[in-house]
Amino acid sequence: MSFADQIVESKASLVVMPEALVGGYPKGEMFGTRLGYRSEEGRQTFARYYHNAIDVPGPETGELAQLARVTNAVLVIGVIERGGSSLYCSVLFFDPEKGLVGKHRKLMPTGTERLIWGQGDGSTLTALDSKAGRIGAAICWENHMPLFRTAMYAKGVQLWCAPTVDEREIWQCSMRHIAHEGRCFVVSACQVQPSPRALGIEVPGWDADRPLIKGGSTIIGPMGDVLAEPLLNQTGLVTATVDLEALVRARYDFDVVGHYARPDVFTLSVDERSKETVRFLK
Image (tube, rainbow, N blue to C red; front, side, top):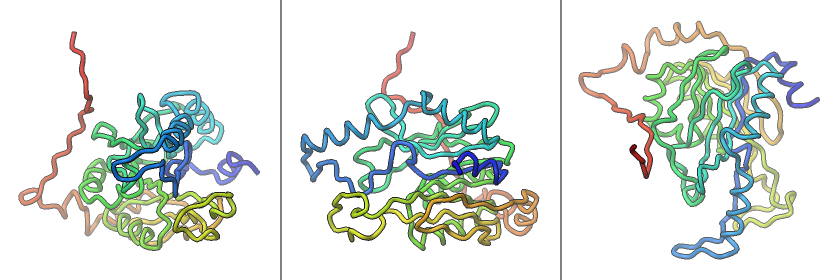
């Protein structure tokens, strides 16, 4: 059964897919770099990675829009996006009727991700109304940024989408915490990558038989309850039925940006202006 058929059979209204699913998450790749030194081989590796990324909009986004139409589901998917000669780790939002309706660029690439990905800005802190509910996305370790979370809570996100490659048990704790803190549903999607031996590659310092990424996609309810157990070491569709009315009940005693806030003591200012290096004024 194809992936599209699985979505149709599940009658899903929202489908969240992992970080960098289109374009690839190059776990273990060093891109020929040492501190203060880049090799020609690494430049060639980056060029191949660049050409594997996509333009937004572009042919690939057209295909994804078609997938949304065919499955009648809102799609949230991680991609590697070309922006000029730079790359961004982005999340795209597709509506079954409207096609591509939004994107979010990762604000802070983690560790050596900063070597290959640029930083997003506040202009793509996206929250959208959809047939599934109000959706927003935080990519991987953006979920650990308290001020980012506060901004998204203030946007009224009901369905928190968390595309990631973090496979650790502590990630599951973070997902439960965010659901409980934001009193929202959390859908975390993590990809699976086989072991280096299975892929026929070498990753220095990595057990050749250990999966590079073992998955762990899960769905959490607004009280931190696990609605769908993490799916590990296999691909598949993790599903759960959610009741948005549960959010009102959950926020009865804790609304983090509402009655439980103290704006007389704490405030957050969010700059949502697009940042451009060069502006031509006519």
